[in-house]
Length: 400
Figure 1 (cartoon, rainbow, N blue to C red):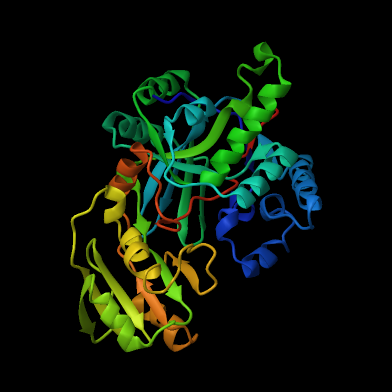
Figure 2 (figure 1 turned 60 degrees about the vertical axis):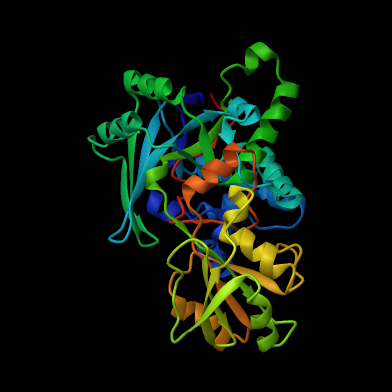
């Protein structure tokens, strides 16, 4: 039920030098280091400046990349296969355009609310630069025919093959219209679900609305701004890690906190740091002591209510700790993707916080079910890992 399209992107001459992590997971220290290199994508996705100057500098950086041949335009409409490999985990999917009309029609399914400030920022950025440099990560429910075509494309020599951020990155290019048409036909029967990149998707949709107001309809047909630059992968290729919570200061005594937890959880003291092993089980480090929490009442009204992030918010954060809005509360912060509980413990023992809450990761099929029901996950529910690189392909929104 989605329309996919090949794209004619700009691609980097040196992807290892040029590509970065997505803008929203780059630390300030990494940003400063990347900006020492004039050929890094960082100058486009996180430009220098203040206020409107930021967006002007994004457009300037993109023009400079083209002028200096840091990136070059592909000659033929293409679909790409992108794979990340490591000894611990590997995954792969397609890079292509998806109709933004499908986004408007609900065939590109969301599971998060966008927030006004970051949406405005990304919309201003895309208006000023006229390019999509970051991938919106989407998933489809496992389809063997699509996966077989991906394997067929991989029989060619990869266009890119390099290492960065602990992974080997491979990119294959497909220009054969017969193969592309097969993929188009297969995706006509699929919905896709946004995994990561809700604000990038929403800003692309806003850009399209602006262009539609400017354009004569006949001229608008086929314009690149109709398409969302997406990395679309089978849902059996997804790894989701926990998005954990840290409470800086407990507003009640340790004893009283544990007593209140007993209303909703069976509590077992643990001798060493650990990760929860199943849904509805949590691990907490309370002032240096570890406890296993097991949910007592497991009759839930909705699938969303059964998620550990929801249980935590509904039964602990708000009623016990007074945290109504986890995004805005200054007594809480989030840690995504950390897997070693010994490192988690350091947030308490070394950094002076009171409570680390270690959650079991959300399952992709729970996300699909909730999204299909037009539900919304609680803030910071999922950490998709590894992050797909930005800058592998740049989708120019003006050039045909």
